[in-house]
Amino acid sequence: MISATLLGQSVLSGFFAGCLYALLGLGLTLTWRYLKVINLAHFAFVLIAAYLTFQLVGKNGLNPLLVAVILIPVFFLAGVAQQALIEHYKVNEFASIILTFGFAMIAEAGLQWIWSADYQKLEAHYMRGSLQVAGLFLPISDIVMSLVAISLCVMVWAAMRYTWLGKALRASLDNPGIAAAFGVPNRKLSYLVAGASGASTAIGGIFVALLSTLAPSQIFSWLGVVFAAALLGGLGSPIGILAAGILLGVSEHVTMAITAPSWAPVVPFTLLMVILLLWPERI
Amino acid sequence: MLKIENLHVGYGDATALSDVSLHLDKGELACMIGPNGAGKTTLVNAIARLLPIRSGSIAIEGRDVSRLTPQELCDYGVAIIPEGRRLFTSMTVEENLEIGCYRPAARGLKQQSLARIYEMFPVLGERRWQLAGTLSGGQQQMVAIGRALMAQPKLLLIDEPSLGLAPVIIKQVFETISAIHASGVSILLIEQNASKALAVAQRAYVLDCGSIIAQGTPQELRQRSEIDAAYFGAGN
Ligand SMILES: Nc1ncnc2c1ncn2[C@@H]1O[C@H](COP(=O)(O)OP(=O)(O)O)[C@@H](O)[C@H]1O
Ligand SMILES: [Mg+2]
Image (tube, rainbow over all chains, first blue to last red; front, side, top):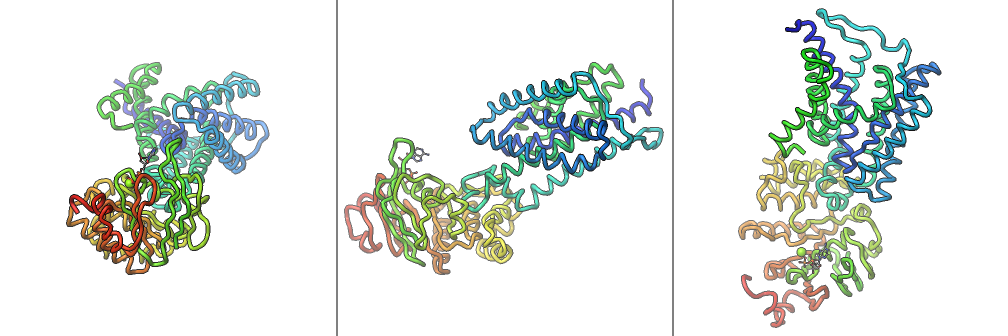
């Protein structure tokens, strides 16, 4: 039997991990549903942003907030550029997997070439330390990341529901022709979604750099669990991916605590398969 | 208001409309009747710029619109009530209506427009938070009409509004169309239900196999027995 403290700590770490899954998956789930693009390059963007943060904060000594101000617009534009390419070549949903997988491979090679394949850790004094509550450790960096992830998910949810842009986006998903006939600018909206998704990779990447050790191969290690969260949460649903991310994170970490770490990756996919079997209309 | 000259539209190699010319005066209600597959929906979609045209011109208030995008056209005050309603089924009734006034010129009037539509169709007011896809056919048609009215249209394109509806609802739909017309909106009404359409129209066109084969006032058309036999036959 494991102690209550260990269990509590596992649930907490799982919660933080889940928030990171949601942060990394928010853009993915939106572009998947609204643009019909299954964007594997999303994780390449995240890692590129993480390495740039590693470089600019760790080596050049810039403040992470300044790095955010630089990277967010750049990655917004990168997202738009990628979407322009996909639209120009009329890439369909399936082909988008292959195209963006190719991009992810190239990015991995590029990152290795510049920063080597070794694990690296950003050494900086930002967001160090932790709070201690009832015997549990809450790292400041995880708290900040989780607050950002939760706020972004809630903001996107509210925007989809209550703003003109959000409603227009949903209308254009339901019926693009008729939406256009009422003045909805389908193409501009798709660029906006692609850009927002790109911007979210910058935010995710900065946190990945601040929270964890970096290796170029992480592009592909994030992929599985974040995909599972996107599917489990219902494609295009910001609250869904947050809930599913947390569910997966907590179940992974609790599994690790009561069995062995090697069992953790099995959890998300078992959960995903069970839920898809019981509830196939989920996707 | 609307002037179409020598319009040709096709799907791939197939021709769907050939040499179609028609006009609609300001404030007029013209109807277009014709059998299934005649090209009526193709004409509506071409006017709404949802389909590319091969040749010919479409002008609204004297300005050529035949090369515009649907979005640009909507700024000319053209709204569509499409065949089969084509609502945003996963959105609520009110959200459907809101998209109707998406164009900036109509957006500012959202509250007045909503109030007007809920007065016109009280059931939509009661069900404003319900998903449009879960409404009955008649209620969906009301949403489609309401959505188009939200756009503050000068020209309304209505494609087979009676399709698949019960007679009592059809009657209500036609009354509504007459009321919209009476409020000053120019209307091009597409219908297979010829007698109903001719009863409200001031001018009528008959489309068959992609060409206009007859036109005139409803009285003139009713007197032409060959058209009568073909289009006003059974059920009307
Ligand atoms: N998307 C399409 N692709 C190919 N042919 C079409 C398409 N839509 C309609 N058609 C053809 O164009 C002709 C006119 O169709 P339509 O405009 O829908 O007629 P109506 O509305 O008068 O019933 C028909 O022969 C139909 O088969
Ligand atoms: Mg039709």
